[in-house]
Figure 1 (tube, rainbow, N blue to C red):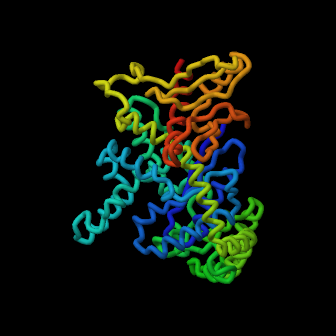
Figure 2: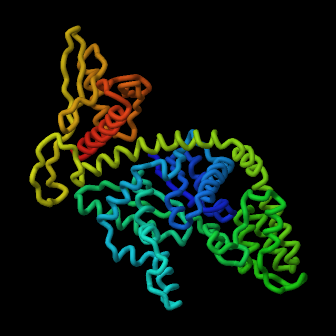
Length: 457
């Protein structure tokens, strides 16, 4: 059983050490585990809240993609994509907006901080506050819930957003009477979830106190580390390791033995200049090989683009059926049959039409079956089987498969469903790519409904 883990970085600047230690490194490490289904995305919609510099956002998207790949992200084993390549995310954002209490958004830290700043300066409380900033938590919830992510690695300052995503998901589930969304859990690496910047505050582009990860090479990394603010204790005077930004950053890269030795050196009075040189050398040991890969990638943007497009295809194969399921749940259904007047009922009392199988014997004596949607539209026609037991076994598999697990290959005007690498059914011919893509969505939704029905029984 895999755990789905999702994380991303806003594309408003050049990646720094805090991004790497707090988000990229732990997420990539998790992605290498066999029990993890990892999703990584560049949050370029979120970037629009913070920046209106188009060139900066464009450059940042390239740099961040190259950074994650250089740091060891394997696009063959994970789902790596741009947020803006997934149209289901803004659609889900609106669905969630319509169930999110304004009072919940009023309590968001970023919004409250902006209001407090305006109040202190005598401005109108909402001066300069965009709807984008106010709605940020809902968009973040959509990023997570579109893929039913179970764990989200974040810094401590983002914990509230995950809690809000849980609140929003619970409210949607309650209103529409079913567990549509998994409730995400926060994952924090306690020791290094937040790195201090040059001035001792959290390393952040907002504070202009960051240490670059790759930009400027080793020379820039060393020069920036030398600018880290320290106290006035002279060489020979004991330093407080726990209160030192140098030690905190060093510990994020070093082993326990190395950290213990550095602590002793600080407590025994090593000079700050020498301590900074030791820190630089330790960080550079890890960063130099990645920097070389980064520089190669950044020079080949077309290769990165292809990786991201493939990642978006993988991501949409999951998000699209989810949105189709939600559209059906909230009443945005196709008008293929007369709507049934309903009133709100308890989840256990729902009577919903389900997809169904129809078995038959072909003219050549073989056994086959069709899968019909809840609306009666044919979704699949099976291959011929020599006996009914084999056909029944495949039907049984399909009833528990679920949409996400289905392996579907597209043909010019049709599609093929595989089980264990073998084609078992095909779809009717379609008029074009759009109709075919819609058919994939409907098929995955139908398989999800069958799996849910089988589980309930």
